[in-house]
Each structure stands twice: as C-alpha cells, then as structure tokens.
Image (cartoon, rainbow, N blue to C red; front, side):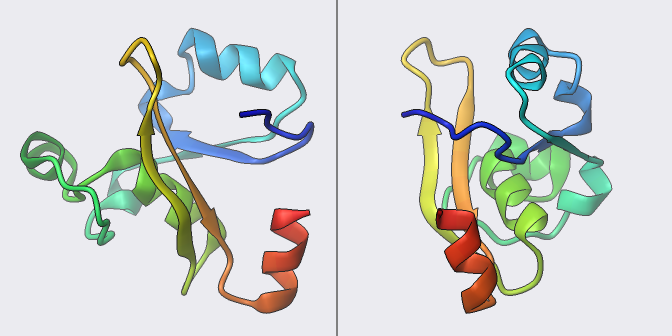
Length: 105
C-alpha cells in the first residue's frame, strides 16, 4: 500500500524514534506522536489483552488512527500487521463528511 506524500501518520509517542518513524518523516509525512494517556479508553474492534492491560485500549494502531482524526472518527481499515510482524497500522477517517473527502483524496 502506498502512502500519499504528506499524509499525517499517528503513532504512540514511545515509537517516535523508531527507524520506521524516521523513514516516514524523511519521506515527507507529518508524524503525530500521541501520549499513551491520550489513547487510554479508546474503544477499538481489535483487542489484545496485553495492550489493554498496558495502555487501556485494545489496539494501539487503531486507537492512534481514531485519536488523530478526532471525535466521531471511524476506522476505514482495521489493524493490519506488516509481513515481518513488527509493525501494525490502521486507517481512520474523520466524522465530518468534508474532512472525510479530503482525507481520502
């Protein structure tokens, strides 16, 4: 999957120094680093007992995507795992129809 240049990508703040985050930043993407407190309580369709116990949400990737898009955001793509099994990602779209059209463009 190609990520259009300039796409904002949300991630947990503790992953902001990861090599993939650095690669994304160098490729021109805006990174939104979210503190674990911001992710606590975000309801996600994917559930991990370990992540829930550590961070208070079922899935970090889905929680980051939803938080970055604001209140009422919906997941367009639920949690996906990289082929190597080291990175997860999810895609959310804003609630407001105008914002949703711009996010999907």
